Image (cartoon, rainbow, N blue to C red; front, side):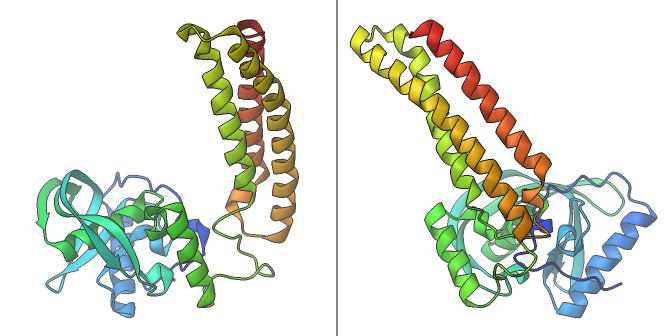
Length: 272
């Protein structure tokens, strides 16, 4: 049966797919749905997650034969090259990413038997890697550096692909992540300061680092407060934002507050 395909910025595609453990009727039905959807949309390849099945299964059309790859893995990859690719998820917006021409892979066939295969063709290898990415919570955007990713997002928005703030979907890049990024950097340098006495650092320098720790600790707590309130605001703006769930946000806050507290106490006894 033909299934609905997920398009950017539907975030439900960004989950890790589970392994295929049974190759009985449910697997056959899922495989049939993938192939039927490929035929309906004239696609050369499709991952199960792209039509809502969170399993490690993808199908690639090879010489008019629909080849199923369950639980695929890359064993070795060599000969890197820049690959300009289009994905139906981004509605055919071309993105250039790094791929590997020569792959050694393993996978399970429709009978559940493990197979080995070598791919030594740029197009075939790029297709395999792109479909494999979807099974492990990765899209073409995630292969770009931060600057390239931001440019690609802007380009997608310019094509009307990305919804505005009046719609239900959350943006792929949340501003609340800036709170987390700055906090993590502050905590990293607090951790570094604890090891400085091991290197014979002067007393004056250690005192300066201790002063930094005393300021970094409350600033980290304030950033987490800001993160919480901005996350609440964002959750009200976007109804279908999985990253806005309060449980996820509390987990982020508790983890960093606990680390900041532990580092502050350690700094008091080591540097104070």
